[in-house]
Length: 208
Image (cartoon, rainbow, N blue to C red; front, side, top):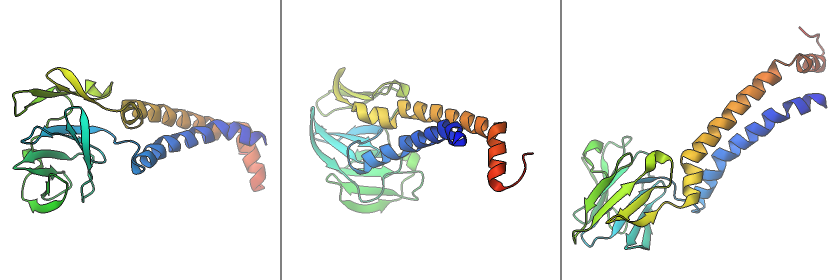
């Protein structure tokens, strides 16, 4: 029984680490979280398209009008832009870009390099001119706070707190801490002489 008590920190940290990885996947599959923000763009009518891990969210002002789930799986490094009333999506893993209509229906492949797709992206404050002269910009805070999209300096969209906590920097930090605690508890368990003696007895041998 004592050996299981000594193994408890290792087992607990392993379970928590697994939970921290599986839970966001479950919430994402259930549609409870959208994940990280990959940029934004505007169509001719100044509808705002916000790219997330799972889908593209469409806003008119502060009101979400629809959610576009594309036919092809969205990669975590994807870029998209609105061009000629279509959504052009590219990924480093794809040999061609994918073109969809503004409702998300697949139209065709396009021979377009990933780097050629304009992206209002993370890591800087980027602005796209709206049809009426308004300025849209995105603030990412280097991942230390939920992403915001601003219209003329006023918050138009804020990344939901659950999305930030489960897929952003907090989730990464928690996993690193749990991984470190698991590694330390594993080393302590393996190096414990009493544990080695009990394991040796269970195997019917003699301790080294």
